[in-house]
Image 1: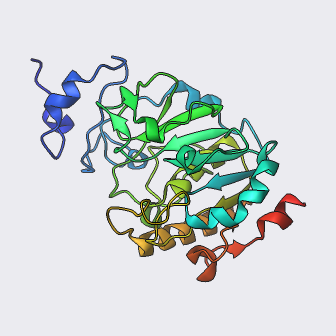
Image 2: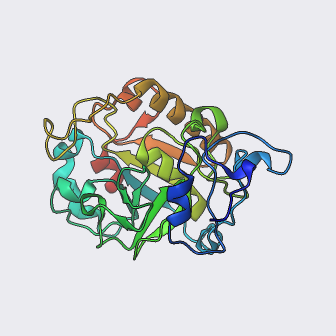
Length: 273
C-alpha cells in the first residue's frame, strides 16, 4: 500500500480508513492536524492542500436578500403557526430538522455540519439527518462527502473556531469553514458566501434542554459549550456589520438575544415586512 507522506498523516490513526475511502482521485484527503508548514497558506489552516469543489465558486454571490436559518431548539414550537409563510423565503435547515415534524415548506438548503451523521466517511448520510425534499443538501465536513444527492463543503478541524479565526463568508475567498459551535452559525458562513445580506436565526435557544420535537428525548448527549457559541456569534455579528450585512435572532427567550449579542426580532413582524 502506498505510503502517505509524513506531512499528510493525521494526528490520530485514521490513515487506513482514509485510504479505503472511495473518492474522486483529484480531491485527495485532508490531514486532520492543524500544524503549519511553509507550503500551506494561512487561510488553509495549515491543512494539506485540497482543491475546493467547483460548485462553491459558482455559488459566490449567486443570490441576495434575507435568509432564515433554523436550529432545532424547543422555541420553534411557539412559532409553528408562522412556518407556512416560509414557502417563498430562503430557508436553511440543519441536522435532524426533518424529524421535528412535517414542515410546511421545503428548505432551500439542508446542512449537516458534524461527522456523526456521516456513514463510512461520507458514502451516505444517516436518514435521521437527511432531508431529501430540500433544494440543496450540503455536508460541511473535514473530508470529502460522496453521498448521492449531497454537495460537499470543506470544514476546518474543530480547533479552528470562528470566535478566534473570524467569520469567513464575506471574504473574497472561502477556506475550510471554521466551527461556530452551533450548526446554524457554521452554515451561515456559506449562506453569506451565496450572497445573502440579512440573516434571521430561529430555534437557537442555546440551552441544554433538547430539541423542538421532544424536549426530553431530544436532549443532547453531551452538554453544549454555550460560552463558545456566544463568543462565536459575537465575532460573526461584528464582522457582518463591517461587511454591510446584518444578523438578527428570532428565537423567543433565546440566550443569544437575552445576553445582547444579537438584536431580537419578532418573527411575525419580520414576515409582515
